Image (cartoon, rainbow, N blue to C red; front, side, top):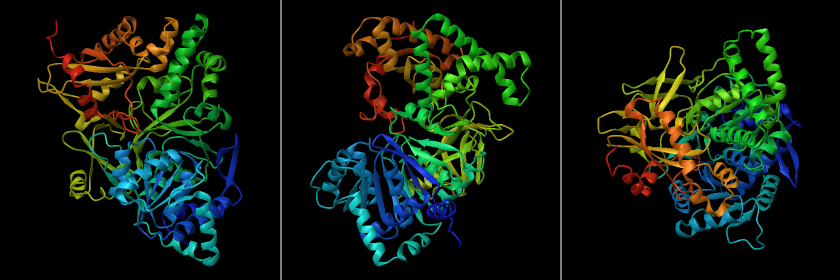
Length: 601
């Protein structure tokens, strides 16, 4: 029977194929519990009929405010199969942002994870009158407020509705068309209120199929979901996994991610640079705390790995003498790094932010390939990817099938294709500014493209700093180089309209804690520790080394170390960990101005 090219169409097609095979794993009461495709189909059936019993109409918006867990995906698929429109709400978003998105999108029904998030949604309802109905995944409350149902109560309504009208489920999910709106995905809002990108079922369907076609997956492959499902990267990954029949699991939490890697041993894994950076830093912290001989063996192994890299990249045979050293390096060092990820990973896919070159080269030297890609909410996440059999470090790879690209005269990357969103919800002006008359989406990213179609992102167009001398300077490149030092967690380059560049620096908490322990300083003095002369000296020496690699007008002439890291709660970074430059410039205005108060010596 024909299945429409929609997300529920993908799921139902695969469910008929796989039946009792395990679809997903989640941890319950301390053990991993599997859900089969057959059980997943039954869960989808009562999820859809449960929503219909609440009066959900096709095109109604339904929110999900939760961390990454199986229930998020269950709710998502139920909404999509019901003809509803999913609106993801970051659980870490501010009350203002949560209320804004609920009001802007007109959320009628909302799933929430727990009591804390219930309070946030109820606060929005008190001012908006929306959402009308709230379904909570887990609660400690004996009595729930009016209009709030438990997840089990929704399921029971679904069973009753299904018993009364057993044909309704099939007719409902089949009535969802490719051109129907599937989700309004709100951008992270690095400048101004978040905008709602309108994404259809066709956008999701073709992106899932086309993005997954560039890699050689097998049905035995396995991955762990831990990124926010509100973000399109993780959500699209789940749709692609459904299409491929790949079994997946939901991590317990970011803090337990490495434990989950070791328990479940993924073969293919989607991640973000911050995870690789944490692992890289922890490895080096452990080496610094160990005997010198261990670091010497480690450094020698990495050196051997880097010598083999050109051979492996080009597919050439490694010389016998070097291959022997590589096997020894793997046995002594690299195997332990592989074990951090469970020991079975074939390659790692990375997106969400630029991956520093030192991370790509370090893990590749150890035999772990990180394939960087590029995409935006407006392109349903992946627009370009590096392939396992054809990749170039420092680039974001080549276009996935179904996408086209060209560069504007100023270097801005323009995209169009089957994965391109339909515009911004209730915002025709922003839509017209983003998509030109010929259908090209203006990404706002400055890029270059080589003869093989590999694309390199050099900076955000709107983030370019124009110096007093008229130079256009890309701050992200410089920031990435500054953050190569494990001690530096964040660097924000400043200098708009100034004669020279400066930087705001935040220091990594674990690095500072290790330093404090060695100095016999207590953790409560962390703000003071961050200003310690020896830490400042290490930062100053690193900036000097970075400056030596830069053009004179790109060099950092002064810097300020802040007493604490940037946080989402204070509005300095987005839920996807991007910096909000305007907010930072506003909040730290006095510190920035102080770096320009006196002339350079």
